[in-house]
Image (cartoon, rainbow, N blue to C red; front, side, top):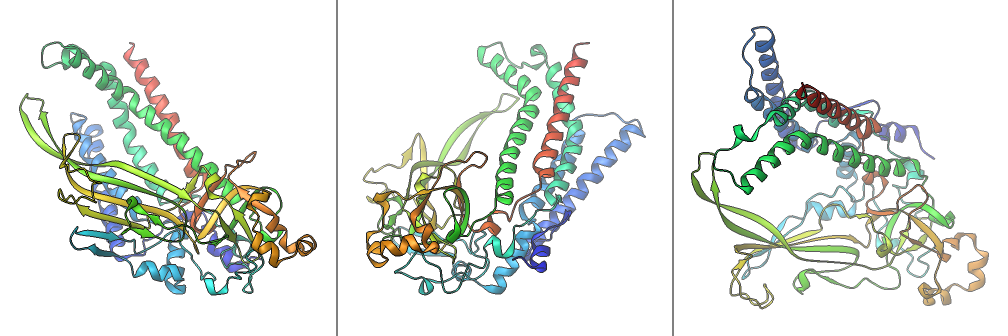
Length: 498
């Protein structure tokens, strides 16, 4: 049952313009607003000079206002939270669930003095528990599929309801503002591309490489706005579908779940045994326990030297630093998902789509030519012609005790996945006669439904929907932008033909 206070808390209303919670986020937010105002004032002054004072006009005069406007808008979007996300941050600070306390005490720590290796752990967790979750001491180790004495988890949608994003948020307002100011620039860029001729463009003698560059610049300026608009539109459709699935699909209590497509929210717990230890980068000094789904990436920072020629034909050398992925690995281990009313076996490896949120830990150290173990016995200073500066290992994972949200398919449990030890503790007749253990005879896999895409995410439904937006912002704004870009492109082609 959902009370009125929860409904008010979860419904963001029509307009969502929310101030950040952290002080330094507020400073960035204010700086972004100031830059946006400066960009708009410069824009207005340029249009005034053109239309009222009949001043001459060039594309260059609009570049600075647009850049200031985009920079300010980017700063606002990076730190401005949704109303729901801010509420969840405030609740975490007040209730202080276990993983919130662990994260708040995290940071950077020197783990190996000789290698100068540091481990970095985030001090916040947007995908962690919002309310206090049942600790391991409250889990029934013998009857892991039975109900908890504490009842359903406090974040279950059947208790608190499902969040509803605002119709218009900061994202929508900023997006519309940027687009309105960008359309004239886009029109001018497309027109310039259509009118660009090779004879006017070339600065050196003819060559195949020069001709190739000319056509690349010409057609990029013509079709880049359209291609980017298409990518934004279709990406927004995918996001809209996922959010709609989460909001519209009813969440089942595990104790009353049935076979078929299903949405579940619960806590990750042990199945038959503890998951095997994960050794990040296959190094025993970077060992992490209790991960049921994980992946890590090993990257190196490489510095390369490039010769650059400017438009006047002058050459100079510059150094560039780029991260390159050298190796990656992933794995999974089946677990029991428990929502307080009961548990069910989940096979995370069957899910193709999953979101583990921010990284658990990141290890960094400078490159040491004399360290045999670090570079796996290969004594190299360079990589693909560049000088190696740093090494970095980043780990993402879903751990025992974490909240988990999934849309999957529940099917009768495979006999090979039967827990024989528990079968002895709970007689076969009791399983068949007790309606509350029906969930024990099922297992969940990542198979798409007729309308829903199977996916598994770290976090409860609250965390999954914390950054969600309405269909107006997912579909209407990108769709309107695509329509206008198509119209501008068509109009530019039409004028160039006369």
